[in-house]
Image 1 (cartoon, helix red, strand yellow):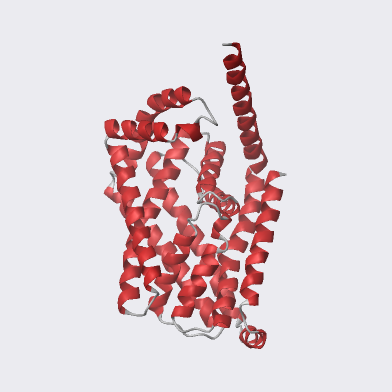
Image 2 (spheres, rainbow, N blue to C red):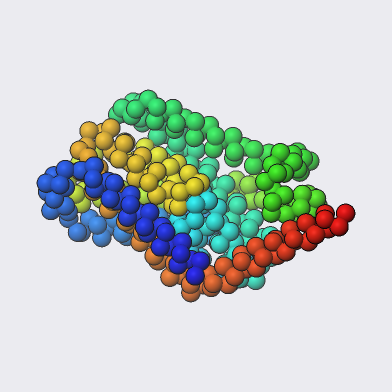
Length: 360
């Protein structure tokens, strides 16, 4: 029931975004653009989207193979699709998808929850590493090959700096156990007012001190292996190349020639916009940022709008639908029930604490 409600909300929000795009365009020009659509290029774009998701699966598979967690590529591809769909439907900067992937992996392989979560986090770190590289390349392209608004370049630089700091912080937190534990305890104390609404602060600190060493050791093993970095970066390269090629073929489908340099900046900005935590799948933010970048390359609003809608159909909607089918096949209902049970347990704990406080 929860998934259906979230899906309906996302669909309604998505339709609202498409309506806004439609209202920004000239009707006659829009009809002319739609009439030029070449279906064969759309088929190629769909295949490239599947290649991109498959490359994402392989990046995770390399980590699992290193951990000796056995699972078939087909089953892992299902979990990858399911994780993406959950990430697209939940406004949580994709963290909802990571939790779902960890749950499904634990369910399908019987590995410990700590180990499955560690592989998911490691895969995410490798993803962000390549994101930084593409961000730097994107800024250089924007400066030398075509002009973007200066405010957009500043935002891109900020995102690169922020992501780099986060990756380095995670790396140092994992590799230096004393610093890592002290840093996590400091964060908990800084946000204790928010954290205490969900669980007693002392209980969280005790659990962190107990489990942090094991979690950090697991991650340390992954991120200190150059060979694993190389394999994961190669998968990321294939994923980004497939995404860029998909965008290019959608341009060809609507009979528009674009500067190839534009595509790298376009995909980087789209991914950055997708990190907005309060928007499911980056809906609205991705579409808006894409239209700004495409328009900056001198393409008419109608072309930018049609391209954005078609490409997001492949990149967001088709992947989400496929992922939902796999999620139900894998047992998303059990995952939701587990979350509901956890929320009930939290509420009961809060009531007990309140009752004890009144007695005192």
